[in-house]
Amino acid sequence: MEVRLQQVTSSGAGAVVATDITAADGSFSLATGSDDEYYIRVVAGRYQGGWIGSKYVERRIDDAITHAPGATLGKIWAHPAFMRGVVVNASTGNPVKGVAATARDTADPSSLEGDPDTTNRNGVFEITGITGEDSNNLKLNGSSQGYETGFRGCSAQVVPTWGDACGAPLGRIGKVFLDKL
Image 1 (cartoon, rainbow, N blue to C red):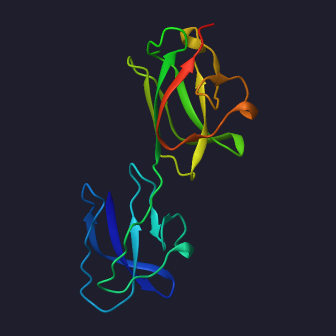
Image 2 (cartoon, rainbow, N blue to C red; image 1 turned 135 degrees about the horizontal axis):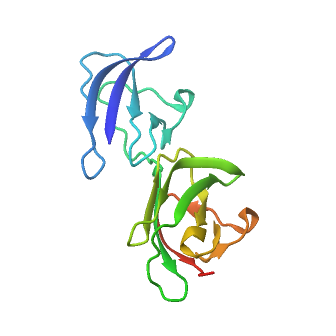
Image 3 (tube, rainbow, N blue to C red; image 1 turned 45 degrees about the horizontal axis):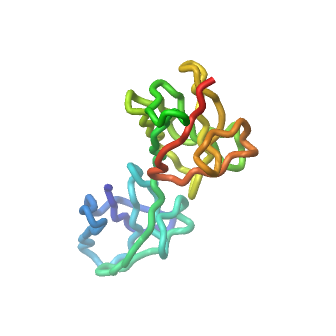
């Protein structure tokens, strides 16, 4: 993930003075070159982008904190920006290809989150570009393949209505069981 160090100005974030790519363990190092205060910005990718706050990557710069040169941040938590899972036939356990998968805001079923996807031959889908925090409702449309359409329920079975759905966590969600029509 790309991380940028930006100068603090009277109107918010100023020029980018350094960039780095996080290592496998999430660590990074940004050299300042002066005694100014800085914001640290995380560029969206597999994790949601934003500004580093006290413990989390925040979406709004108003929630960011400034850092002095040489500051040690400790652990900062970032939400995944994707939802990945496998759609399988509820009876046979075999993967189901060609099922449309969309993420919906848990507060508004008409509000799409991220970029929809269609399951591949292994039943795998990955919805990317999700900006909402915590969880979303997953909607599956299997009608073109002879399967049900509905939302992921609490037991990973598909339920017919948004009101019966359980929010799916961001990141890897495992299997979703779809019934044949």
